[in-house]
Length: 328
Ligand code: UFG
View 1 (cartoon, rainbow, N blue to C red):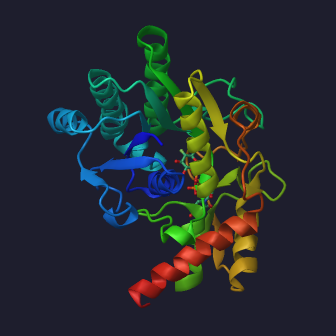
View 2: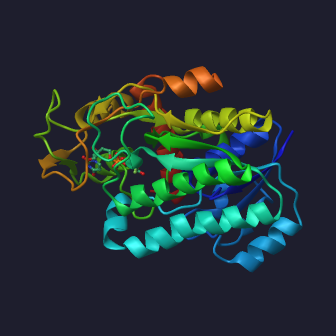
């Protein structure tokens, strides 16, 4: 059993990982400023509402707990928004991470798992993407995460911090057993928007039908949020056992087009997805698929979900619970 600090644990991936950590017997405390996350996602009694840039509150908090490691999720995640408000993204994501790193150094915590992103690759020359592919972010969001990766690399070399950075591909799905799922405000992610289109009858806009892919729509590597949580556990436990730092792609290695996601949703829900093909969304690469062999081989990770309909079904189960609660 280890004592783990989870920043951003009220968000989508952070809350799933917190529940998985507890289920595995670790002790978990969550830091979140609730600017994006939801208190109801956090396991009972474990939430501390603190912003990472509030160094004195962070110091007071760290002085009253002794952590073995940190899993750091807290960040803004909207790629489009980051192009309109880059300063906010650099301050919150890169500045917040640096403040956290300085604070944990002061309090002697030397293990950290970092929530990075496939957005560090920008438009890849080829797929599947390995960790050695060129790092050329095309948004402030991707750059803000890469800057933290760079900081971590130097802290590993110069001050003995050991870290794992997980570069997420497209997280999706939900864990009905924990009663949590994907909720963003505003929502920009494909699968929740597909459900909204089914519910409201308002057509979903498919961003671009003229990409150089078999059906003309973008291809992404969808990974179930619980599999992402288990990747964090594997990375954490390796670090706690004395393992070296590393950077890992977190995806299943299989790509699906936007139209394939729509078809999976129709199959799962038994309803038609109203949609119209619109223009491309700026900054969307045609195809992002992970080569996740490093994560599999080095950390012994394997996804439990390998079919898109199963992932979509878990998201739909959460959506039904959520709508039931709202009484709509
Ligand atoms: N899409 C649509 N219509 C929509 C929403 C999305 O066609 O209304 C398409 C997008 O163009 C894309 C695919 O569905 O091809 C998936 O889009 P998402 O917005 O769900 O996810 P992204 O691939 O844009 O973003 C994900 C993460 C980001 C991360 C990025 C890495 O959510 O945090 O991958 O490139 F930065």
